[in-house]
Image 1: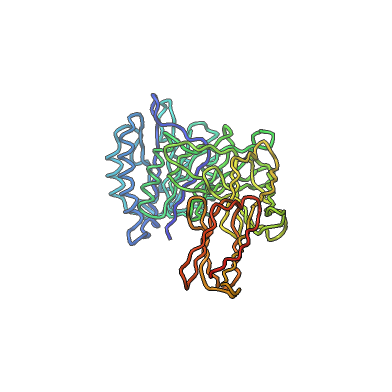
Image 2: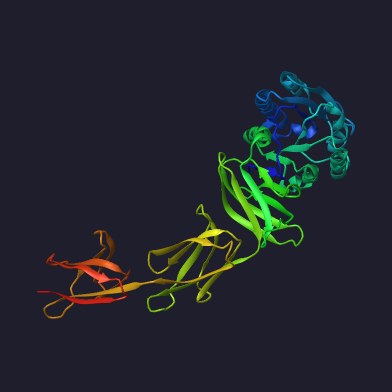
Amino acid sequence: MKRKIIVCVLIIYSILFAESTQIDLIFDASGSMWGQIDNVSKIEIARKAMMELMKDFEQQPNVQLALRIYGHTNKQCDNSILEIPMGKGKHSAIIEKINSIKPLGKTPIAYSLEHCAGDFSNESGEKIIVLITDGLESCDGDICTVAEQLKNAGIITMIHIVGFGLKNEDIKTLACIIAPFDGTIFGAGNAKELIHAFKNIVETTIKYNLELRAKDDDGNDVYAGFEIYDENGSVVAIGDNSLNKVCKIFLRNGTYKILTKNNLTDDEIELQNIEITENATTKKDVIFAERVVKIKIVNGRNEKVDGTVDILNQKGGRVNYADNSLGDYVTLKVVPDVYNIKVQNSNIDMVQIIEGVDLIRNKEFQKVVIFSLSTIEIKLIDGNGDNLDGDVYVLNENGEQVKHVDTSFNPVSITVPSGIYTIKVVDYKTHKEIMFENLDLKKNTEFKKEVVIE
């Protein structure tokens, strides 16, 4: 099964500014890179994806690159070497080096991170580490502690990770590396997704299209963690808002689910069907408070009508849903937002939409939704009062047929939403048509008629 993982934690820094940005690429050449995906080794897939990454970085004039590789010369846990020193115009040298290596050893992530601080020059500007790995620490190093030490040292300004073939649990294990820096983990399960992940490394540093904030009901910022899932249920983002109270990330076009957890109370809020467009910024304030929607569905005589209630976000995505089988009222809980509410009568094809329900300022919305229905009863008989076979057609104001029944069960009873209708009765034997035009059935009325065919 293909797996696509893009993990975001908080602020993404721009690499397009006057002073130079230094990026240290830490490349995994451990023995597991010989593993195959779609009958192609991971090292071969990574080589091709790195070529695309270098093409993108070539377009960034203020970026310097360095390449550190681990696991390529022996199976020792200190096998991590700065192969290409920091500088501009290193794109070809990096590709040539990666094409020449043969995966061999272990995965000393902590050791590599400990030594990468010396890979950067003393020039001012952002100093970013991009770790490219297909696995977890295998040399008993403490990756979380090392990441904290790098942050405290004040040299490294950002760490991103590209994870190739990582499981969701692996993502959460590696998240402690990026957490002190509010960095990003991009992941992929095949060649195409790895290229996309590398492109996101570049794009995330220069733009974003999703902002996430967490607040309480009084508008105060809440320390919270975010998990973003794609339509397949795979984790595409994990992070928190510990810095600057906002998470900014670039995501591809798609529909996502956002699970937000209050880190103080462990309360969770789930936002579903969040549409992301690459060329527009989506902003979401996750408010840790409940809002209640109560809908009662009745007919014009205030009698309960079987029905359903859909709560939709402003883009039409379903947020919550229930029928009224358990009671007179449908009661649904949602997070604060502005919603549209779709109420459907289950007995007939009739829907009412309540638009723009503001559940940010209001804590509860309650409404009785009335479906005004009318009944048409037609009995088709001859002059002796005997039943006749025929058809009954019900047409709306526009002349469109909305109902059609035959008279095999005589009389015929038809329920329709209140309105203006025309009824056409046709006798099978004589083909005679009887018309009742422009009937006003707007007020829960009943139209009963014996149609006599002589």
